[in-house]
Length: 365
View 1 (cartoon, rainbow, N blue to C red):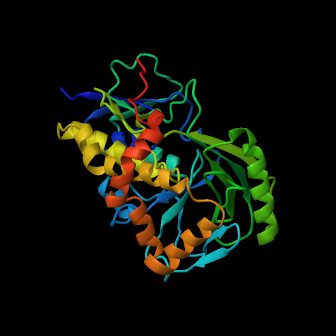
View 2: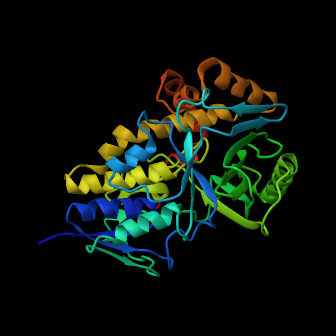
């Protein structure tokens, strides 16, 4: 008898797991609380991280049995980083391969979310039940319900504007605590679709002020003429390292799989969804795969986040200069997320500092 695998959540990790399980012959049932995929997002643009592995993320998609049928733009051209007192422009000589791929999130055609949904629906042995929030998780095999924030503050919030403008694809990162305290601001455009936003880790109550200040700064500096009324959007995220491993499979942000430095989580969501499927197909321990392939990067990111908090003002400028002129942008980011001696030395201190982020998954049942 073919086993039916039950998944809570039709996000990136849940759909990736379902596609791989269905391909292997399993029957899959996905229970999604909302009425569609990508409801957390407002057609905003995000970066699909591409620096922590030697293989390009689009090639990884193929090994994960996923099709590249979504809109994307490689971030290795028209890339800028602004600090308080200097603007840096990067070209293809500075960036050997795209640092990330800009993708759209949400429900419409061309988004990453809708792409995976379409791929899942190609399998007759996948059934998706929308408007079906899970109350009893006891018979759920894979939990991929997204960030779990209850009675506590999120680790970061993103606030911004989405709009259209007749401009080329481009990527801008802003490192300035006056604009985004302990975080960053960003401007992304792809196929005339644009996002200006801040991602902050503190002073959430003033987030709207940082958002509006950054919006005005970029609109005026780049002389952008919007083609429609900018729409507000916001999002939250959480990060944690598991200190004990549960008897359920937790994927994506439900399992704390998030980059603590810059908040990149899509790649982790897809990878953990794939490893969830592989662990079931090959009768392997899911958390052994996590400890081998994911946890070292998480530990490096928590150490890097601790070190990053000491940067402020002109030190951001020195950091970017060092990245660009001394070791190269790709190598710098790979180092920041590599499990090297520097990270190992600071990891115990970082874990103590971020002790609330060292925990088990929240009990859902």
